[in-house]
Image (cartoon, rainbow, N blue to C red):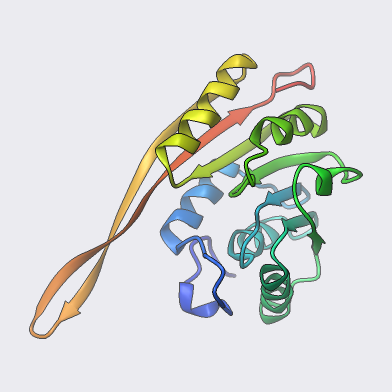
Length: 195
């Protein structure tokens, strides 16, 4: 069985950014995906998080929402590479591309295209009771917008910044090579069905 944090080299990659293994593993920890969950991966990029989610939701369904045509192709190729048939790729921009999707247990947001507030509006309507939102943000400004919007909605949320340094050989020595730090912010729905 494949565990969370699949080696980056196992994915087919192009010029589309990809979330690194250590970050993906932590996103899966925070997402707490069950075998029969419905998951949305908004701003799916190459599909690395989509693949990780689909491996967790073996009897569920993962919807990968991506606006970049190259990203859409990569998600499809990676789904084939990993032998997964529980992934549906949605080519389009959120929030419009989210219309008509089934209610979700987990929504992972890795890219919002500047439409975070409208995406959160749909999340509020589409998450099942006790569902989870996991947002990743590379910039401080995006992290601020995520927290400010969650706070305004009176959602229960928490978050942290994660910094990873990978060991790399440099001749007879070893160095730690940093990966860009990332903010991971999560929210959970209340029992009444709203977040």
